[in-house]
Amino acid sequence: MKVLPRRRRAALINSVLGVVVLAGVGGAYAAVHDDGSKSTGSGTARVATVTKGTVLATVSGSGTLASPSDAGLDFTTGGTLTKVNVKPGDKVTKGEVLAEVDDTDAKATLQQDQASLTAAEANLTKVEAGELPASSGTSGGGDATGSGRGTQAATPTPSPTPTVDAAQLAQAQAQVTQAQNAVDAAQRAVDGTTLKAPVAGTVASVSAAKGDTVSGTGGSGSGAGSGAGSSSNSSSNSSSSSGGSLSGFIVLTNPAGMQVTADFSEADSLKVKAGQSATVTLNAQSGTVLDAKVLSVSSLPVSSGSGSGSGSGSSGSAVQYAATLQITSDTSQLRTGLSASIQVTTGSASDALSVPTAAVSGTGANRTVLLVNPDGSTTRTAVTVGIEGDSTDQITSGLAEGQQVQIPTVASAGSNGFPSGAFPGGLGGGAGRFGGAGGGVLRGAGGGGARG
Image (cartoon, rainbow, N blue to C red):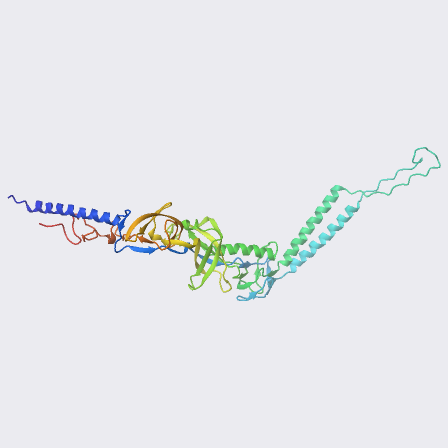
């Protein structure tokens, strides 16, 4: 009998072992992936019961609290401060006088403009009365019938009628209008020397003291100017991406009507709609959960930085979109600028049949579950899914309450499709299962190939 050389014998043994192991691998792989119409359940498979309850789908974002009633206030008319009636921390009411500047010049201008208006109105009155000489009346002679009888009385001479020059009238009216506009502007300038609170609130800051000079906005009055400033500044402050704050000679904050602008990943933002309910959790007080409602969703991206959403679409360069939400819970103890986490309910179904999300396979209209039969075997069953919740899916057809479904075993992160990431039969995990750099075959977890 001819004896094979040692190297050839080792190679032959390795080849035989390879065939055996590959056959075992194929059988194990088929067993793991077998989801035929009737398969016996494994001991490690989880089973869930079809139950009735509420299915919720939510998305998460992050944002900052801000109130549209917050206001950064400035004088309409600048000048030297003569009164400052408040300090930070004071609570004020709507219409309360906060500060005043010297109004001497503003009042002098108003008096001059009022005098000009009086003169223009007097000139208009004279023009309307007419300044052209009256035309002479017609002479009489003969009676009304033209008979020429000397005994007929003559026709009376008519009174002169004033004649108004149209061009003079238009010019005089324009002068009155111009003078009136000047008086109105001067009156606003006088009113603008007094700063009043447009809303009730708390004084957050005062940037100057009595005797200091402050600039004016030159707007259309204290009330209108403050309101416009409040709207603009509040919008800037509520933007979580800008991180800005209100500015002005006096800043008022007011928690009434508190809102939050939250950023959502682009995928999640498509699910957020006006009117949806939400919860707001303060980051500084995790036990404080507030109710809220979505007011609007921006159609423009607010950032391209790192995502802070709920995961879907959130990556290092994810685009985000902002949604504004109105807080409906008590806001009296809230402060502008507090950071918060927001969870918006994008879908819900009450008293609905549901199973764990992990039990449902497929997408769209092609959804199935593994229904557990009374004998323990499973049957692949088609189902219709309604609301896809965070942890459970609503089942609208295909299952009944009390039935059981199998939750497939998910392979671990071994990247080879086998549970625990190892080949069946204990051939080990990790690199080099089918040989190392030297060209050997079927090396075990810790050693070389089969040796002769």
